[in-house]
Image 1 (cartoon, rainbow, N blue to C red):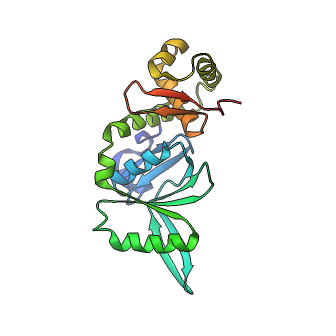
Image 2 (image 1 turned 90 degrees about the horizontal axis):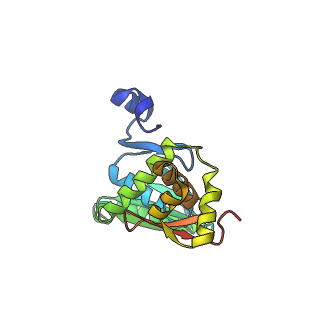
Image 3 (image 1 turned 90 degrees about the vertical axis):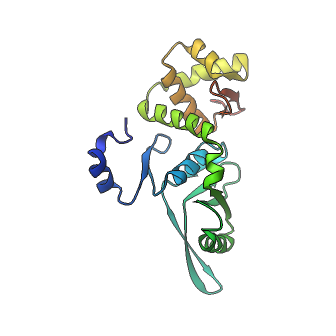
Length: 215
């Protein structure tokens, strides 16, 4: 497992990622994630599992643009590239919009110059979806533990979806007859690569087929 165990405890973790409070491993990009606040990571995980996310940065990301002959600098919490349009979105996670008004205005000014959408997510918005967050965190952890394992299951998962159409986690577990955590890992990977779609509104989440499943 690549979350915290190899970093020598608290001291080792802070030595490797100074200033970062929330740190973990992203099995999709196979890189470490680090943010200063837990709610920044929570906002990041929601967007990592957005079906439209083709790529996403893993830490606070400086953004620079020229506006009216002057160079402006802003910091996005993370930057996303859309799978559907290829456009960039600049995301800012903050406690409240009122307390972060200056940061938001600067990022919006830079975003306009770069023709990039700015998305602001508050702490209250993130925490209103805490059940979904923990389901996504379960999937991320499964993907980390079983990184590069069970790749042969992807074809079997696709076959179940071809035969049955949309299904749920429980049916897939019974149909495949392997470790539930391994199935979670493969479903998370396939979802984040646009090969299927997960509806995480319930613990026994739905698995929805897309036209692109292993074609």
